[in-house]
Amino acid sequence: MATSPTPTGPRPGTPPGPLTGFTIGVTAARRRDELVALLSRRGAQVVEAPVLRITPLADDLALRRATELCLAAPLDYVVATTGVGWRGWMSAAEGWGRGAALADACRNAVVLSRGPKATGAVRASGLDEAFSPGSEATDELLTWLLARPLAGRRVAIQEHGVRLDAFAAALRERGAEVISVPVYRWEAPDDPTPVRRLVEQTVRRQVHALAFTSAPAVSAFVETATAEGLREPLLDALRGDVLPVCVGALCARPFADLGLPVLFPERGRLGSLVRYLGETLPGRNRRELALAGRLLTLQGNAVLVDGESHWLSPRGAAVLRALAEQPGRVLSRAELLRTVWVDAAADEHAVEAAIGRLRAALGPHGGLIRTVPKRGYRLAAA
Image (cartoon, rainbow, N blue to C red; front, side, top):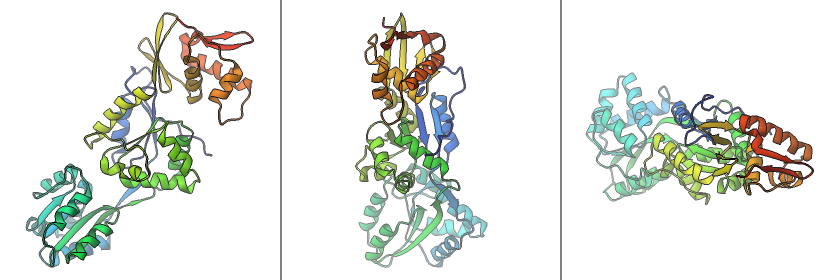
């Protein structure tokens, strides 16, 4: 397996935040910097691995051909599925000198928008939407359209990186003329190495959570694991130790189809996603200990003492967590090997080395880990 990239995180000396101690994988390409900054400000370490990239089609013949078809005769319905896609379409048409004509064609049609972002883009272009589902689900747009007479009607669908063939087919079955408008498409990243590494880190439980902002990214991440022969180990990790969190219900749908936990905030926004992680992760992986007159908080891969955070390696955190199960109880080297080095070949020297590194990482608090000669190690219980 490839080596793991060094995660980005808060600067040394930064006060602990709600996500201090947690390593979170970010799979987004668009607005990735914003998401990383939000997580880092709350104390998280972030592993960046864009699963897909958006390729604009401003000069693509398919987009221009679809636009000309929209202008060849009056449109009855126009479907806006994403804000970035709608803006890209309007901008491309403007560049071809067809912006005013396209705006007029849409203004004379019934415009549907899939969620707040698409709605905002539609309104910013001087148009009004007739319907926008609260769930941001494409299925609701289809249900709304199928409740109307469609025979002979012309419908333009702005696609969002993937083809909406089933959506278009359902409208054509009712007699509509459908024009699919491919404004951009999702493609594999130029360098797939970070994605493969993040899959490996997930399988090894070296990250605590994964943040997803689009359904295609979820599917592509699982497909990468499948190609690496790690599909089942990945799904097993996501069922338990690693928390998969999506920006919204639509993004989470591929996880639901796989029978995995479907976790997302009520509002489909990056800020809501980060707050949700900050509220959920500590409850899964946080423990307070009273040791030698001090209160220590073991959170993820960090120990919080006296307002300072001490980051540990995943192995060091696992050793400390094992010792913290029963503070004061002596754990032998053999017990620590069985508990912490479950899937790795190691001997008792590895335990001694890990204890040494753990004490060093704890700095002035390293003495809280006591050696009991010929028996093992324990925490200095209160």
